[in-house]
Image: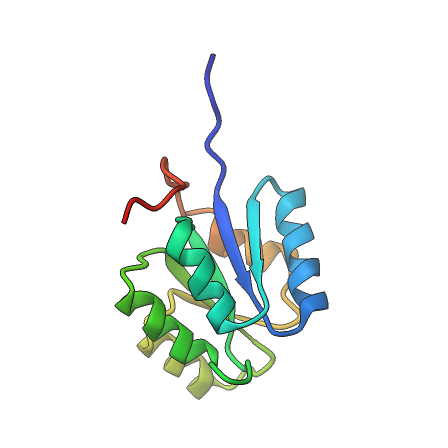
Length: 131
């Protein structure tokens, strides 16, 4: 019997409704989803579970998406980071790419755009952290 390994996605957004909608959309397309509504909550989740990709809201209070990306990397998290923002200027997009994000999506995020950035990311074979 062949088991299918699903892509694990972390959604980080301080707007709980936005996070839940993105989560449901991802689940409808076969992803396993974890949701965090703050940078601190995302760090806790990443300490115990390996995600393949993290969709991170840039404009969060307390710890913005750029700070969270730095913290994740300093804690050894290696998943692909995708910035999500309500702002579309080129300088914001470039700042996100310079900060280590692999892609930049503008809210409201369209289904096709979301799936296009997720499709080349292979699911990990291990989900529990061993550190």
